[in-house]
Each structure stands twice: as structure tokens, then as C-alpha cells.
Length: 305
Ligand SMILES: [Ca+2]
Ligand SMILES: [Ca+2]
Ligand SMILES: [Ca+2]
Image (tube, rainbow, N blue to C red; front, side, top):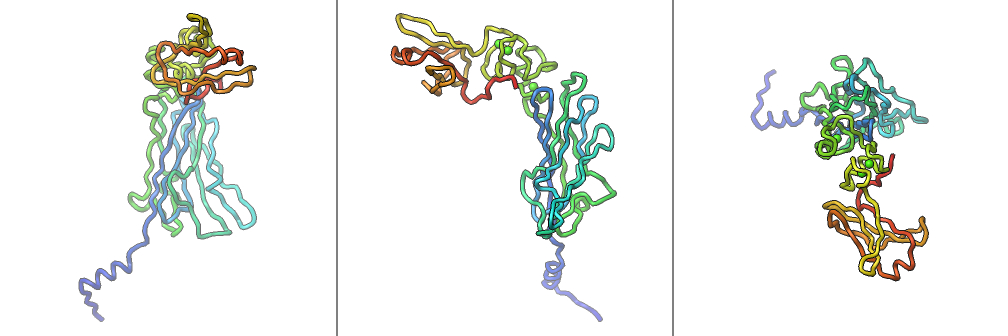
């Protein structure tokens, strides 16, 4: 028997036999720091068809960092056997310097679902810096168990890493402007301390009760205990005037109250007029309030977290 296919029927045959669309998965991470600890979140952008499993490794430098916590995202990646959630495999540390994450989504109540969507959290990690290291941390990502197992599997049964280009894993990049991930802009650290080494956001080297993160937000001098956000009330030409040190591009809110825990906004969105701002108080305002305070708008409170 002999088949002769004309061009249009070839196209038709190709259309009929086209493989199902392949999901694509882009895995990437973000790192940030709160003082000496560094957090890393690993996300995936997953297109349809959905995936039912992922396995990947996060690599770090064990001379700089030590794993304090490693967690998969169990809200999304879980087994449900129809009656209960069955715990999946915990993250493993096959050797120092790498963490292996394995996640699967299988729900017997709805077995034809998987996971799609942008910015789907796969895992999170917390590292401690070791030996006072403040070098720039970098984190590499790779397929979890290359060549041995299926790692990224679509709901169609396809093993995605076997399809060229279907799985992309990116390195975790340090935050622009904050290469040591300590929450302080590197330029600010260099201006204030000459270097980004050995400086943490939670430090208060001048002992004025405002940590470096607060000093950065205020635009005050982290090496000068007299420089921070303090409020002064004094008389000027028969009027009472509030004043406080200010820095460019900031706005402030002044609050007043008749007790230390009963503040109300007196004026907000006050533009900075560096190096000081001042504000005249109406006699009535002064008479009704014995307590005043000033806040920097839009900044995290400069508390010693
Ligand atoms: Ca920094
Ligand atoms: Ca300080
Ligand atoms: Ca200071």
C-alpha cells in the first residue's frame, strides 16, 4: 500500500500529530537581609499546562553562610490522599553548601490540577552569616537531581527538563545598591564608614538610640550622637517654635497631645528645609498640648528590631 500525501494533507497531519503544548518554568530567587541574617525566596513563573512537581538545589558559600531555616511552600506543594494532607519530603542538605528542595502537588480530591502562575513561591531559606563574614552572597540554582529522576513534571506527564528551554533556573542576584544585603545602601555605608564591611543596619555605633537603618532614613549622621531626629521647643520673638534637624527629600509629621500616649496629627507632609525645619505654634495649640513629637513620613520606624 502506498500513501501519497499532498502538501495540504501534510499540514493537516502535522496539526493532528502536534505534541501537546509544553509548560515552561522559570525559577528565580530574591535575597534580602535583616541585619546579620539573609533571607532567600525562590519563586517560579509557570505557564500552562500546570506542573505537579519540582526539584531544585540552592547553592551557597558555606565559608560565608550557614543555613538557619529551609522550608518548602507547603500551602501549594502538598499531597492530599483524599482525607488528609500527607507531609512531603523535607528539604535536604546532601552536602555543605547546597540545599535540595522537592515539592509535589497531588490532591486526590482533584487529581487533574497542578500548579501554574507567576511568582509561585517554591521555597524559602534563612542564612546566618558566619565568622563575621559580610562578603557579597550569591546563590546559584540548579535542577535538583539531574539525570536521575524527573524533576519538573507537567500534569500531562511530560518531564520538562527533558524539553530544551522548558525549564530555566537563574542565579539569585544581590540587590542593586546593597550588594552585602544588609538593608543599608552601600553608598551610604561608604560615605558614613568608608566601607560596607562590618556595618549592619541594626548597629548603633554612636549610641544615640537610632540604629543605622534609622539614621539612613533620617539622613542623620550615624557617627554623631547629636545627629538624629530630636525635637526642640524654644521661644523666638515671643512665639514658641518647634524645630528638628531635617534632610533633603523627606517629609515629616508633627503630632501633639495632652498626654504621652494621646498624640494627634498637628500637621503632616511637612517638606524638609535642611538642615533644620521649624514650625511656629499657635498659642492655643501650645495651651492644649503638653507633648509634641515629630515623625519621618514613609520610613520604617527607627526601632531596634
Ligand atoms: Ca549594604
Ligand atoms: Ca545611631
Ligand atoms: Ca546619630
